[in-house]
Image (cartoon, rainbow over all chains, first blue to last red; front, side, top):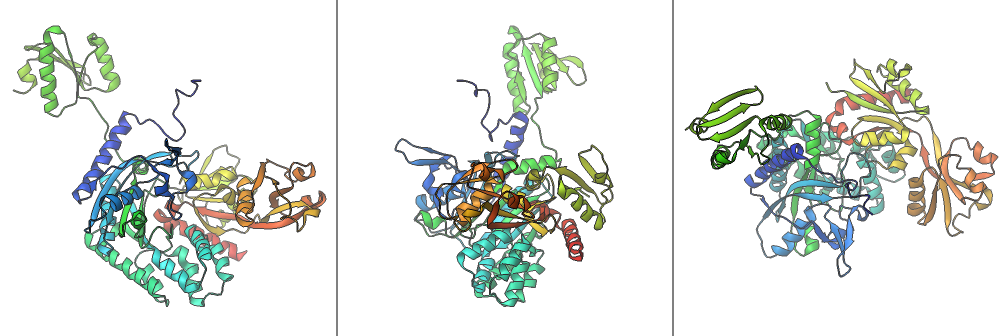
Length: 418
Length: 213
């Protein structure tokens, strides 16, 4: 009956001290970035009703959610992401608030999708949402916050690709393709399957110049001239507005001084029902998957009862950690400066010394094993502790420097620099 | 410069892939030798090659363990991985079909509870469920799929057909066409962005090379 007790289920894992230390530091740095821009953190439950994520045009497929039942038989899920909970929260707890709302979150999410391979089923997402405003300034603010969050993690070589889904939507309206064919096209373009796009285009009666444009979509990424290159086509209002919107966001990001991180991808067309404007994704070396993604989703909050435009992004903390590791970017490790040991006579002094050193900012471990010095030294070496302070009494404190293998004797005043 | 890593399918695609890469000026000498090394390098162009089981190539590429890969469309359809499919290399061409006894010709819709034997459960399911909107029972086999309808294990099969000779000799016919299959070049989604110049050079080079043939 107990044969599984020593294992963790597939796709979830323990995080040990070094990694956990690094992860918390990373989360703290990112949290500071969010806070400093006025995105205060909220916490939503890990368990939610399945209904919240159900929407037919949601972003999480039914089969990828962890599901179970409550006592009334209603379906519960472990949250697959945190944007929808924030939309629910904003629409219900802030339904009469008319000004903009800014939220941030850092929390664990769950997704069944990945079987085997390097992706975990439990992973940490950090993100921000800006609700109540539809403006290029808001879109740029979100992208700028995303860039700051990645930079503060220590990654320098990364790229944010920005697209505008309305460009594609407008283009498809203009070609006269049905909703189903549009979806087919979207999948092919998203896959950059040039050949299949060509075949699909051939079978339809589409204006010649638009045919050419659709065929080039999978390759429409790079710098600003991507926009210039498509503006020579005669497009409908929706596509033209989308390009203008994209230009304005890029201009704002330029003023932020962030242009070097940004590039354009007009062939970025994921989740057309969910996203309603600017969308973006972040890439770096070594991760293999995007480290962040986001965009404008003006129709989502409405589903929870409040009409409100919104934009935001979420960043995969674990993906960032993988990228940092693969790019061999040094990460801080936890360390213990001193181990303090004592005999009964020195106990009260030991506690004082302990507190005084901790107040100075040192990491101090108090020995509670009362082992002999030889054993303590062995322990200190194994654990990488810098030194052992053995308190005999106020006038006699032995300081053992483990690295140098030296021992000296000092008084309490000397030790604490008084 | 970072190394670009290319995953090649072990088997009949290997030689044809090597030929293409040599044609565009990559050094594949190590690949052609009988070395037991798993990863082979072209130091001049900073490229690493490795050979993998075809069905694993999309996985290596999706996770970014390889930036590029060459693999059959059948494997891509079956694995359903998230990656860019940038080039049809044209070689190793064949068809994915539904086949069965000749008496089922035109009657595929008429019997309930179809049992479908195949090496490609995902492709079979996808085809019957999405295109024909039918539920089926998939029987996963690992080879000689044509045998299944002959011995009553299944009504029909979903399999690759090149010349159709095996089918014919066993009294089976093609009942429906699912997809045209050939070798494809695939690219990791992040690599396409981060190394777009080098990858596009390779892709364009190979495209030109194919057009020449």
